[in-house]
Image (cartoon, rainbow, N blue to C red; front, side, top):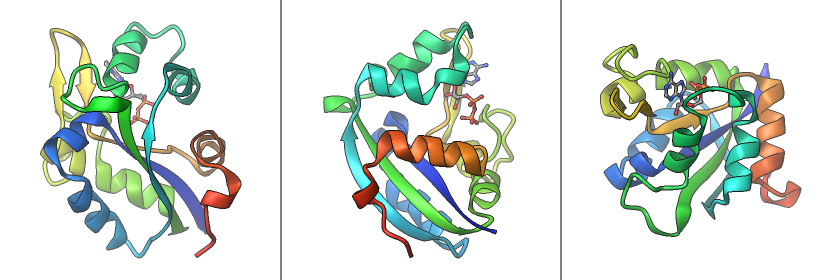
Length: 152
Ligand code: ADP
């Protein structure tokens, strides 16, 4: 089924300069980029994005991570994309690998470039992707205005 998926280059992906590599891998899944921009994120946006983490012990450090506090990225910068195509969510999540890079297959994006800081309990997994099609629509509405997303 043709669907959309929000993809975010997190601050560690920007610090490692792997945005192009990640986009290259995802485009090869026969998916189209239908929106793309740099965002200076606010704490409010990150908290809304990660509303499902409410009550988790790692919520605050995840917010700080997404605000760029642990990487050398100024202006709270994140790059946001919308990919569209057949089975987009499943294809992208398979290419990313497991949430914890130590559990991700080594050839996946998170397995190749992510790391888990056990002491600080921060999962640096480089890239976010929506985890199902309905949630993708909620996330896309948070990150993009309607006119910024074009149908492929
Ligand atoms: P995913 O990003 O794979 O959809 P979740 O929605 O469960 O995973 O978690 C959102 C983000 O919160 C993760 O990408 C990661 O940055 C962080 N996170 C998840 N689980 C943990 C954990 N056990 N410890 C620290 N950070 C975590």
